[in-house]
Image (cartoon, rainbow, N blue to C red; front, side):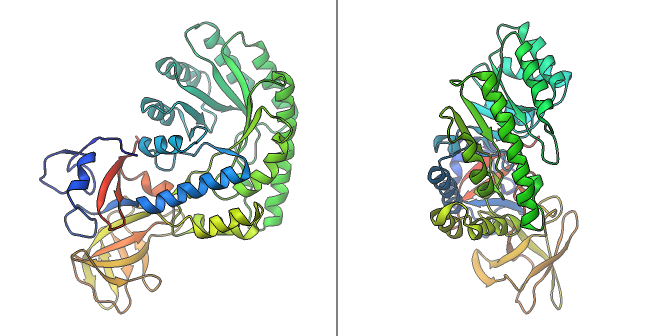
Length: 428
């Protein structure tokens, strides 16, 4: 996963006053977030845990007979994306044109923009992106014939632009077509295109179907995939029997439902592939994502083999590290970790371990808790625990997507908790 870049004390975690160094030199320094040398707060990832989570995802895909384009909006780390491609990912999903540009710049060959990108202005920006990276394969969602017409005009005038692969998004609570007639209008617009636009399949995002009661969720999913089936059939009729197509859906919470509903839609079409887009499950966390993954295992829709993999895997790989700044008896501790450093949209960070001098002093969970966050401070309740300023608290996070985006570097730790590499992130 190594992709060298230059680190200095402008980066979180990097010790102050040192000369800049290549990330590939970190393994020789014996730094540890718990040891007092690194500037805190900083974000780390347990390489072993990430590897187990990654291998579990790919084993579930192999066992289920589906492909995956991991959603890289979670880490926006090209080194991790390349690792997933090398492990057999179909491609890499991103959220917008800027993220696509980052991945193309770093050599990712196939990008799925899992979103609509805009109108006429976006069509010009997309053409510029395609022209800058002629070897890249770009896939993106569309739900408007007007946008298809805008693309068609640009591609018709530019013989140097490589083919663009368009996926009709079937809507479920956000973008996407709502009817067969809307899909037919998009197919007709593609039929008018003179060159360069390829109708490549059907897309959906099922996460918006999630409801407190599973019976409601299942009803919405049944409706969504019935409409996906209709649109996919129309796409196949337009493209002919030999054209390669994809059906893509599947975040980290309901991918089992996607597999059991999506596989029958492609089962009799040897040229159509079901492609998942899960992303957060590679990191897991100490909150709802882990709980939803355990719910997948409990539902047992993917047979016992996959349920066993899920139950044994998907441990949290990320940690945030912060120093104790102030102790306010009897039980309040103020840490140097705040809203600028960690997610809070799906719950506050979880205090796990108290360190002193690089050694474990106390296991904190579940008695400790964060009561609130300020911009730079966490208010931590530590009942009946010896603690003093300068101690380090290791925190788990509850939402990887909105934690990593606050950090330009993820430090990779080995089984001893030592930094052996770092991954640069690109959130803009």
